[in-house]
Length: 250
Image (tube, rainbow, N blue to C red; front, side):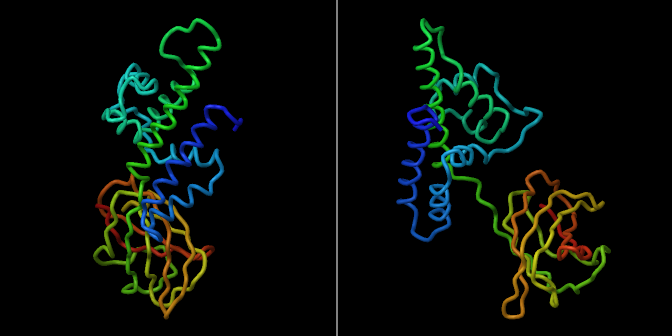
């Protein structure tokens, strides 16, 4: 980023906001760790990270009219406006607001210099405003779930194991810890959450570790678009056969 540019000023302000937030977070807490990680990012990566935690909405469900989005971009609506909640959870609207704030002025301009000044101000205000909103709201925090599969045998087969669901998973971003069946080997693993019919709903990977004769596998799985109901958890040590376990999304 060019020194002194609107984007550069935004990032400087973001870092100040993050440092203030980090000082308020308990030392050693997940929030403190997350904020410290953000401070170590490059300027471009930091800027993109703050805008990346949004939900896809390709059908533009519930989106406000463009005039309302333009008002947000030009800050003629306050940060307390409930439309900000929609923008921060809707990728198309977030992109529209960001682009409107980057390149448009509120009123016709009399000179290129004034046009550039107002456009730069719009970028600065939008960037700082959205960042402050996100830091106050907090980034999307994965839901921690532990699933114990030790009641199941190690089966080198893609046939599903019978019985009641091993555990339930919410339709959210999940930090999943799996206690694997006895005899499972450590190493890299592939994970799939599948529909009852076998269609992949989400994929992930992770590395299993062995400690005190227990093999644990940790990964992050995005189930925000997964339908509720009976499902299957498919896991395999990379290069080996899949094992299927009954689960439920609810």
